[in-house]
Each structure stands twice: as C-alpha cells, then as structure tokens.
Length: 227
Image 1 (cartoon, rainbow, N blue to C red):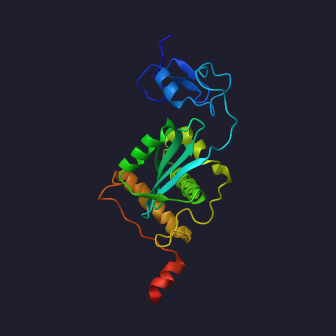
Image 2: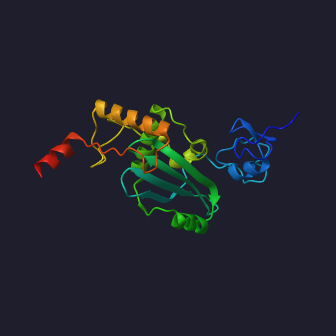
Image 3: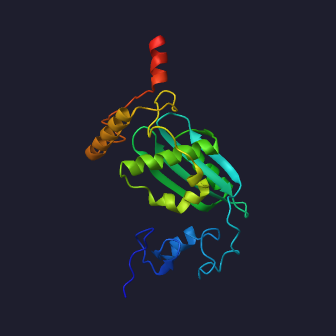
C-alpha cells in the first residue's frame, strides 16, 4: 500500500500513525511535535523521550504583545524541565478577520527564542496573560463567525496558552477602535462583518486597497463631541 503524504509537512511520506493527530505523519515531523506532555503513554515513538510528565501548565517564561491597535501579535512562552522553552505566537486582527496566523515550537532554547523575538518585525512589550488569552479567544470567535479557516497550528500549540475554555468573552464581537473595550451596536458589528467578507472576496485584506474601519463606542463618541 502506497503511503500518503505527511499531513503536517505535506512533503514526505506519512508512515507513522500519530494518535494525537489521528493521521499518518513522517518521522521528521513526529520528532518535531513529539512531546511527553501531549502524546499518550502507549505511543511507540515516545521511547526516546523521558517519562511522561504530569499534565499541567508549565511556568511562564515570557508573555509579550505588540502595542499598536488593530493587529495584535502575541507570544507566550513556558519553561520546560530541561530548561528549554515551548512557545506559541498568534496574530489577531481585532477589527476585521480575527485570528489570522499561528506558529510555535515544542522545544527551543532560550537563546534561540530571544533571537527569534528580536528578529520579528514588530516591537513587543510585556503583557498580561489573561488579557492576551481574551484577545486570542475573541479572535477565534471572530474567525469562526466569518467562517474563516483557523490555522491548524493553533491546535498543535494551543495547550501553551492554558485553558481557553475558562476565558469569558462578553459584549460585542468587535470592540471600540478608540478605547478597545467599549461595545459596538449589532448594526455596526454586522457592517464590519459584511465589509470584511467583501474585502476577503476581493483579496485586498492586508493591502493598500483594504477598507479601513474606525468604529467607536457611544462613550468615546460622546467624549469626542465634547472636545
């Protein structure tokens, strides 16, 4: 029987059945994603790893987020027992498309991680984990509401964030452009969704031809009128 391509890299032949992925993957990708915290104890390919650790959140090493409004890049890293890190990087378009991109690593040295962050195009600042998780959760909800593809990498690295199920997302799907917290009316939210889908269909998202939206909540609008 001819082996299909690995579902992760889609390049090499998938000869190993991965219980975690529920698909066949290649040996190289198996080595990259293999983690004693995620893989089942009876996985035959765990023999080269240490014994499975108790499931739980690893200590935080860094929680970083870009400061400009609109498109937020968030990086969360946790320290493993061997001194290396596992991290997830998420890009969230708060104003239109929601969660857009995701990547990460199950095992990277602190030196390499810090080099990677330094090479990223945006400037990062220390951030609050709960705020970051709320932004990511809202980004997922926006993408799902618009029926957009959720990056498959999120499934692989999502555990690094912690339990998102306990994160409450309240109020309107999109928030005020000015304060970032105020709710918008249902009509405004529907308008944003409509314009976003039109821009996606036209292939102009992220380009100069993209429709820019600046919707503010009632409180911020009143403050602007008083000035």
